[in-house]
Image (tube, rainbow, N blue to C red; front, side):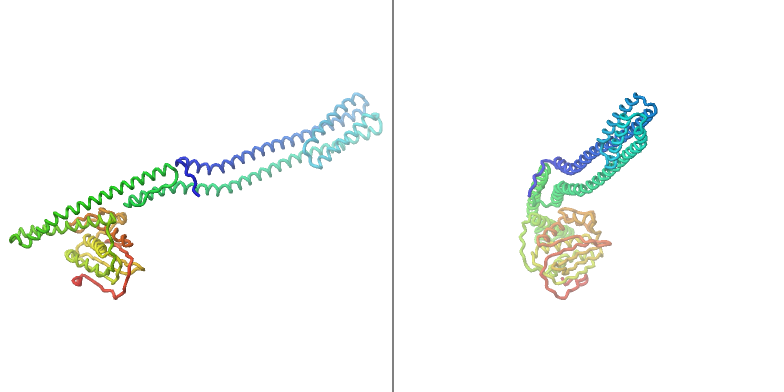
Length: 492
């Protein structure tokens, strides 16, 4: 399923923020509503409990007042006291009715009913019987029972307050627990939302970073595709435009190198042939000084030819125009031939050559592989000090043929291990001689090795020196390995 992409990075951030904030906002709103409801409920409960207590105290006061008036009437027999008794009786009935409207428990409700009934009975007796009658005496004596009932009703009201406080406490505790569980439930949801939107936000950034790294490594074939918001997609389109422009520039550079290399070969051939004719004495004998000049010409034209061939190989490697002529290539014999070509350079530096060449064959282009080995050995010799060590070995590693070339030179810094295979890159280490290379030898080797499905890398070689490891897919045959050292170099 393809989700619609936001039109901008800002909108995507807003959507992600909304998804994270909405659950929290919902929880806050729920908490606010719940707390408001709880506050209203608490206010109403406390008000009713306080009102019930106040009404119960008033009932007790009215019972006391009725008792005082009733006893005065019993002694004095004054008819005016009955008016006061009637007024307080009506107030008592109104107060009792008000109290009965509050939520009372069963015990308090029964006590209030009994209080009302007894007060009505006493009032009826006092208003209908003579003040000095026996029934009046009995009625007045019942005021003590009435007072006890009024006190019990007041105690019941206090119990109601305590009960309401406990209910509110329980509700508050329940609400607190609910809020805790809501927070616990929201936490994984918010974390999930953050993770999902982090992936959505970082994916186009990773794609852009990968595209920049790919362009930086000189790979211009793969198109740049950036998913996500439209503004980041537009940035990806601009990077793809840059990729195509860089590819065009690279192609123009390769064409320039090819054309210059070919143009240089024609006058170089004439110069070299002329120098050879002079050296052979075809145009006459040369004196000693002339002979030295001719030797310098021959040597430097040979070096120049080697540099031009490197540039041609570089052009072929980077334009992917080289056609691989697959054949069975015995690596031990190939390396032996290259060592023979490099014999004078090895001897001039008095290098201690150690070679372990197992007879291993691979399927590949013999000339390409020869260029690879020649470039690697030339680099090793060039950076080796006088009387240094030069080691080359072939062995089988799984389904690959591994070639190791080790020298005693200044080595390759960790920061340069990847860049040494870039075209025209030359590290800080200086060659042990007067020849300055073009910086394309290792890049050509990497391209030719990659064309054979192999890998080339710099291996740590402490404490000093450089160690290049080359791996090629192989078809091998096993024979007894033979050891080559400097005093047997003539067998190559």
